[in-house]
Image (cartoon, rainbow, N blue to C red; front, side, top):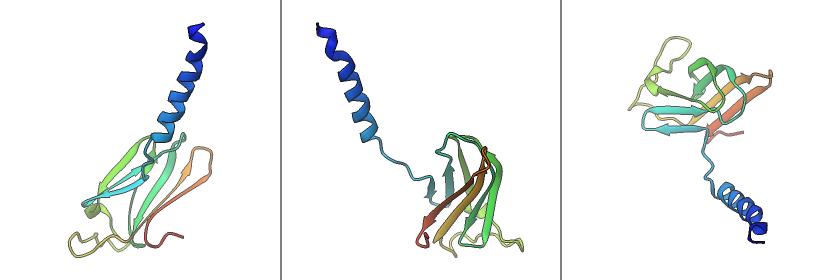
Amino acid sequence: MRRAWAPGLVLTAIVVAYACTEVRDPIVINGSIITVENQTTREWRNVVVTVNDHFRGGSPSLAAGATMTAPLSRFETAFGQRFAIGRQSVFKIEVTATDAAGKAVKLQWGTNKR
């Protein structure tokens, strides 16, 4: 008789744990380091990270659940100008990619979210 309530208790514990899980931002800036997390179940391909509309960096792929970390100093414009840490501030970050199913991925961080 005592075990009849056990499945309900387990289900309740799972629901409470899920509800209390903190949602993480997929784009994080920590000092001069940008971290992008693929929070999906599909690999992303042709990942492009654009800072302040001009400075770009990226990766050919980002596995499902994986993170990509890069210093701001590695981002550059089409003319080869690098992001100047200390002289520039980050106001916008956009991440674009294509997932393994061919669907477009677009993430935004900052004041100019649309």
